[in-house]
Image (cartoon, rainbow, N blue to C red):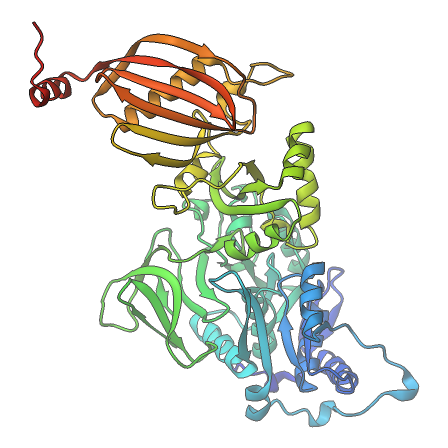
Length: 573
């Protein structure tokens, strides 16, 4: 099927179908574009950000701005912080221009509209995305490159000529823009304007569209598809497309139509596709791939933003190492760019926004598994005033306060769901962030958090934090939580046996003293010393305040005990 924007300018067939089934023809759309382009051309700025909830309005302004020789920045959201950042660069959000009958400029006429190669190559689009460093970056794509990709999609998938695109993903995302809007526009097909939220909405839309007697394809995401159930039956549907993250294994079993996963990015465009769980990825026909020395996937395509090889941050394994069209297996990400639901997020960028809050002096954002799904979490360090506020109130109210501040800085999906507060971020002996310790904070927490550790031959000093989520705080006591002495002995044994492998179990105590309380959010220094082989001295303090001290008596592992005797010349009589 021919696929080019120019071919359908005067077409009488339907481009856009509204929720009430009212219809907008191609010719009417392009007339709307010409009117808006004539008005936008007189605006002073050369670059505009574009954010429109309505797909039709977005598409009109997108082409009108490009025809008016404006550069278009596809914004990922429209939170206040982003508006301010763009305004500092003299970039403002574009809206539909008011038309006054007595003064309509005629800079663009439908009869002479020419979307030729010069226009396609000069028309500049930027996708605003997060870089691997966390600093947002603008990815340039020409309209020619986007059309190349649309033409590749049209050739790759055997879609019927009379087809309606139905989407649950936003057109503000390059995946939604390509599949929902540009593919129909270039190929003479139609799109259903509303963006749908639930599987039931998709089926209801299909049932409504059935009276038009056209088949459809669904553009969706792993986030929505994993909510599907077998009793939600797709109607007149040829394909379901999924992109924005890995589709969970087994989801395909719930749908009565094939699901095609698409792998790609704002920089590269579409890279590859597959139609079975855990199948190899097959590159699109116009995509060449290779693997770097560190197993990173590199891509070259005529629809990518660059003619050179682009490294993707994905670790892969090729089936045929020397074949640029080889199928490959994904092995995970090499950087901190993640896919959550259908969104591409930078953990570094999220941390940067959280650190802009007055209350936060340090933080680390991470992705964790929670009840069979992935969620964003944050480990944060508060300033003294905020820490006092947290301890005097409730954690729930304090977290709600932080989240409310972040609403103007981050999209809702990028605001961490769960929070932990520590006096400092935990680090290992090499002073690197201890990411395992931070992951453990979001599981049942049995031990205090090791913030730092220093060891010598017979002594180790731990810096420990006691977040309120520790299991030992539960029930001791409902209105005044303290860490019980038996729990303290428990973690002292644990740390002692971590340091000295020949310690077997604790069978006694000497001179135990619990001099003060360990409460939630306490930061405690624990010093352990080994004496007389089977005795471990401990002392805990918080600042100048001594909390506990004593000696633990251990049985030794038999083999280690015999070796120790041999080394020292000591034998039992």
